[in-house]
Image (cartoon, rainbow, N blue to C red; front, side, top):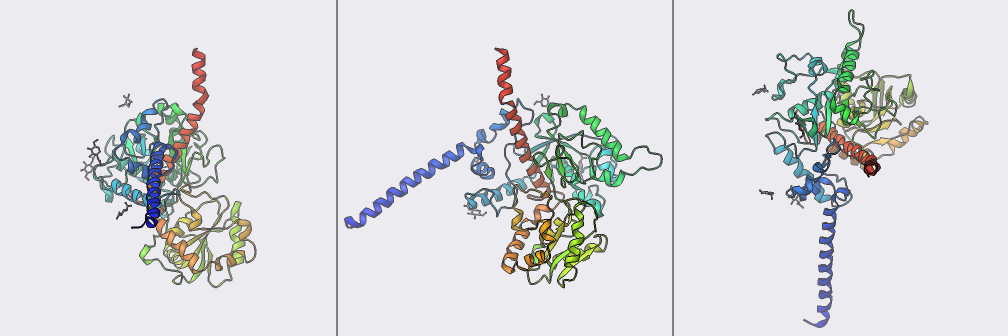
Length: 498
Ligand SMILES: *[C@@H]1O[C@H](CO)[C@@H](O)[C@H](O)[C@H]1NC(C)=O
Ligand SMILES: *[C@@H]1O[C@H](CO)[C@@H](O)[C@H](O)[C@H]1NC(C)=O
Ligand SMILES: *[C@@H]1O[C@H](CO)[C@@H](O)[C@H](O)[C@H]1NC(C)=O
Ligand SMILES: *[C@@H]1O[C@H](CO)[C@@H](O)[C@H](O)[C@H]1NC(C)=O
């Protein structure tokens, strides 16, 4: 070999050595500063499966504040899309493995491994399953959920769209039921001092739907009576007093549920459909979690989902006419769109037989309109998603579930209400979205649709699992605020002592 050819290869060797060294150095650096989330927790956890010292460090530290730190928030979002910017292939593998770990565990979950430890009050059945007509044996508070075929059923029809309370409660109950296989993202703990969150098992939406009218000689409705009782109960609990309710999770998905109690319980974290009927000091995105409606239409199996050509309708909308609030826009759009051949735009609710019609309509349309009604949100969006019909969201105030981990612009079109009512605007926009671009959104819809499914038992990445993820991310931010408040408070206590 001649000198001339040796030189470049030696140079190359040095270069590789140096870069390897830098690579190792930088990974060490990343590991050290795990808490600043340079890399997603899921990856981090995988790397550290065995070095428990790092993984569990946070729970010990937090004894001063009663809310134990949420150790990790491995997002259950579909594995194809990494959350962070770097290392996408690593991340996708990591999250898959995490899911596999969760599902493989048949003997319940290890509380130390769960992302969210929830203490659930043993409220009497009149607050939860009793509202479904369930009665247990004397002193039995919870139904036996070990047989998924024999759990108390939630009344069907439109009540179901707000049944989030029911699925979350069932999931916590099943977390210590041995033969139920579910993701271990949340787990019920029996001692509240071990809990990250205190779950309040009140079926508030059902209580509103079924019991807000006065019956017979009643002076107050059952719905109001239960809320009053709940407020009294909570105010008397040590768990509530510790942080003034900040560590409590209350589900109030129907926009009218908890109407009497929401002000008094406003410090808690709510699970809501939107903030439309709440003043900002009682409910806001800083502390509360937006959960999807349970869709009414049947899900479109991914394998059967019609492609661009297979969807003859351009636009689909079916809904009620609202004359109040933001809903006036529905009528304006109706006059703009009603004469178009490839547009289905009708007023009427999706009940009974309408459900089949709407399922077919959405599954054979390219775009489905989601127009503000009397509230900013509606189950129509989730019907569209599970029909793989690209949602067109015309609702300026809408809040979207899990938006911190899902980028809706990948599979939804957003149109400002003021633009949508301009002559020709909407149709020009939608007709301008050609096969390729539409197909990209449709592919993404098929990937994310399972995040909006409620089921028992819960599965990795479904709506229940996603809600627990969202709750634990909120807890981190509550924790953050708490610690910031402590910055000078503690030093002041020290100063006083000296
Ligand atoms: C983790 O460490 C424990 C002992 O500390 C050992 O028994 C186990 O096999 C290790 N697991 C892995 C995956 O290395
Ligand atoms: C990722 O996982 C797949 C199968 O789950 C495996 O074949 C592949 O080798 C893994 N890749 C890495 C980088 O670990
Ligand atoms: C629940 O029901 C199963 C049978 O379906 C039974 O084996 C189990 O003991 C029951 N659990 C309780 C706590 O009663
Ligand atoms: C709950 O845990 C705390 C601290 O670990 C302990 O002091 C208390 O006795 C426990 N309570 C019950 C009812 O086990």
